[in-house]
Length: 536
Image (cartoon, rainbow, N blue to C red):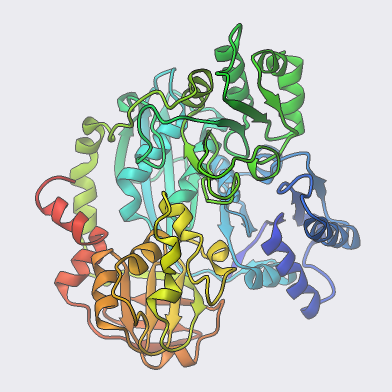
């Protein structure tokens, strides 16, 4: 068992944990170490959300826990004011990864696990794999750590899974705390168990920041000249004081493009005050920008409409983050502000610099191919029954949307419309017999892989779905016994070519042939072929 130093409650999953906790026990393990920080949907946008926030506040009042409402983002406050190196913090929100900037370990859990933590102050956690990146050199002054984060994600994501703790060793001339927070926060997109800076560890690879040449955009399909209707500077990963300062500097004595709305949301009341005192907010408003309250998100105060494009320096680009039907493009602060002045994306997205790729390629490939022992990973279970067909997995009417993120928001919609918002990278689906039957459309497998589903375990699979999944880099495992004994929300450990572990019991699984195993590890048939031909 892992001793927990602090727990964070700040979102809807946290409220579910509170409900589960209240049923089981009457007193938390240490109320002073449970932080209730309401930093999402501020102010509430519906009576239902308002009621949920009152219930979380009532928990804080009942047990006299530290409580904050709308004044700061949780990751910012805990990183700067509370945690220290070696601390363990459990949360239901991935923004907790930001505390890794202090060398603390942020662990994201589901509601049931959080309820146990609230009661006992301990977390049952299986062994982790460590992947260490040494940072050296100096980043170009015109760039920020978002470019570094996107570079790292593009190159190293195949080495990261739900059991990986991604470590950074800072051998630069000295990164600021905010830069470390930004890097840790952005690396949550890689699907790691946690991210943190450490003083010293044997590195797997080295990144020279001086070789990061340009900012990038996500998704990469966004092209030069795309019209933009809105720009958002803010949120937990975009509302730092340095971001607001840079925005003001770039906008001084200028006006926004006539059609563009610029919204700026400081990450905390402290940052809001400092930005206002320094005159940054006045400069932004004189250029035509709007200042939102601290913690404000596009979904509440900067929405876009059907077919519109928003450029953001925050980390989120899920379909409902700024309104349904629009597209969110993520980039660095400078590029976002330049877009607000021009009215369109001002550069053709480039590939990661070849110099960076070549520098680490040999070590990465060596680490990938060193696979004598079976790969092991752990994930949370989502459970289904028999005959789950591809129309349930991915309904036909949603296949024509412009972005994969929007398509992803409709997985399993006919059967479980709430599930798309709950699924997280590294989760595992467990099903009954004939999983993936029906239409042979490849998108059903492709979208599950894109959503980050680590594996599907079922009693049996439809033949074409099985191959489509392997070709998209997703692991499928037949195991007749497990589906009847596992419950949704359980955590299982998969030992490829050996067994599945669940509550102390081992379930035998078939051997995955070497050629299929290589496809899964490479990320699918296309990526495997490119690697063999030296394209990747």
